[in-house]
Structures are given as C-alpha cells and as structure tokens.
Length: 149
Image 1 (cartoon, rainbow, N blue to C red):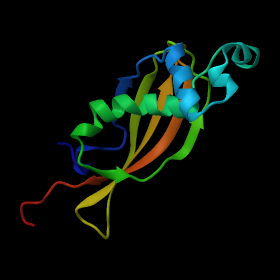
Image 2 (cartoon, rainbow, N blue to C red; image 1 turned 90 degrees about the vertical axis):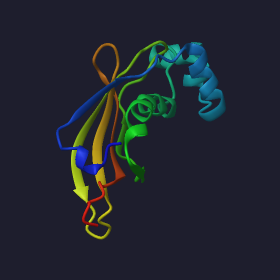
Image 3 (cartoon, rainbow, N blue to C red; image 1 turned 90 degrees about the horizontal axis):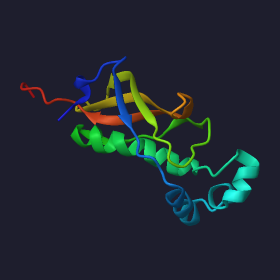
Image 4 (cartoon, rainbow, N blue to C red; image 1 turned 60 degrees about the vertical axis):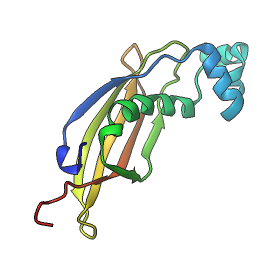
C-alpha cells in the first residue's frame, strides 16, 4: 500500500488507455452524451473530419488505467475534484492514448494528521503526441501510521 509519504513532487507515472471503437463511442454517447458529433458519423465528418468521442468518455478512459494500475494500491480517502479540466483535441476511434500522471505537491493536513493531499496533473496524448486531455486533481491520501502514535 502506498501512503502520502510515498509520493514526491516531480514523480511521473505513465499509463496507456485502451482504444475506443467507433461502436463504443456511439454507444456511450447514446446513453450519456447524445450529441450528433458523437453519434452521427456523417455529421461529425462535416464538423470534425470524423466521429469523435465524448469528452466525458475520454476522461473515463484516461482515468481507467490510473485507477486500475495505481490507485488500487494507494491509501486513497477520496477525490476532491478537478481543476483546469480541459479537452484540448478530439479523440477519434481506435486511438490509444498515452497517459501521464505528474505529482505536483504532497501536503500533510494541518488539522488531521492521519491524512494529506496529493495534488497531481493528469494528461493524455494521442498517437501524434498531441495533448488531448488534461486536469489538475487533488486527492486525499492517508499518511503512514507512526509507531509512536
């Protein structure tokens, strides 16, 4: 298990998302974001040169490997939100994204000594190396128990 003290500013963790198929993009959009640019390939082609994923689906796919490969082994108390959430470029069917988590700050709580805040930037790049998504994310993490406690 990783605790707050196991992180340091400047650490970088890398992951990869699974590509989203055209069918998965359309199915997600039909349920959660039924705009034509996500459900109608002909319309999306006139506006964006082809079908594009919903930003919400992109965000979930970017977070999926972070949660499955890293956060399951972190003493996570809970997320605190998203700052500077940006969808910078469209994500297209069958694009695998390179995901990077960069630790910005590790701040022990002054009022609750058993925890603190891990602040990180999460970004994803498409196969051309262009940033398609980024957000700054604070998350509350348990601190290691001190033997003198």
